[in-house]
Length: 358
Image (cartoon, rainbow, N blue to C red; front, side):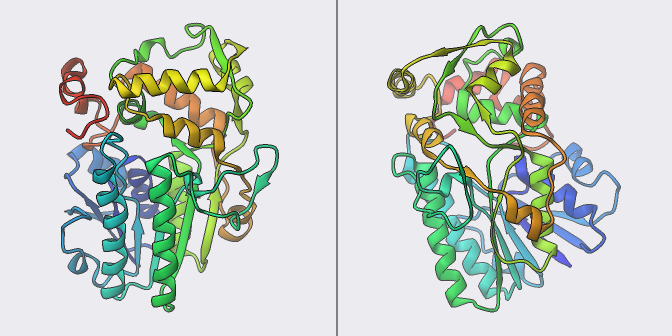
């Protein structure tokens, strides 16, 4: 089996390549990315030295993808641009138009199966006190570009399935995906250069806001990679929610940080984020905060029973590992994950403007 993976140098991409390389059913993997990985990443994604993985430079917005996909059995589409949140036309072009080009290329290349990385962020607002399954509407949250784009791509996939009934389509909908080596990238994308990583440790953060709607589902990147491997190699179709236990709420986060919870108005927290985002002090938009407060809690039973997926890490372990990575400045030898991507002293992040396209 030959598998092509877009967005192969990112957080989920590197874990997916490693999972595929270890699967005896997979004979070859082509990792596509806008920028080539370093030698460390090549070794890291194939630690057993199987020689299955090859790399190709490709941009989903303008590269001719058909030759790269021709002869593949499965395409796994992971490529996604989170920033710049201040220029949504840029992310729309990369994420929506780019995804459409990937789907079209897969159809033209005659690929038998397409696996797409959707998200909990594609779901419409839902309950926090009970989990919802994959039938919950995927209309997104209109105030966040990320959610709008994820929801729109779900509609592109609906049309793709109608036009290509012979292609097996799988939609993986993860919660928040963390690992130690993704810490630098996620800090750049969401917190910005002003966050001092050394302070993110137990005892240094005295309080955690007690927000009743804050309930986050988290999983480890390695477990996400295994879910994509199972979707690529198994005889499954449709959508699968993936997340680990427990759901992280304010009390869980306070326990992780050794802090206490303090009830604060949600409106005040949002206003502070909105002001910081408007001043380019943080890259995460207030719409992303709204999204986190509105998304439902997902039921992961179908992934466990039909996909055969069981996470090896708890949500708490994944998040704690991420915090350790923040303190250590951890990363991988790929452009998105490399610790030095932001430049010395994070100078490149400041010079380009927080949340703007470099």
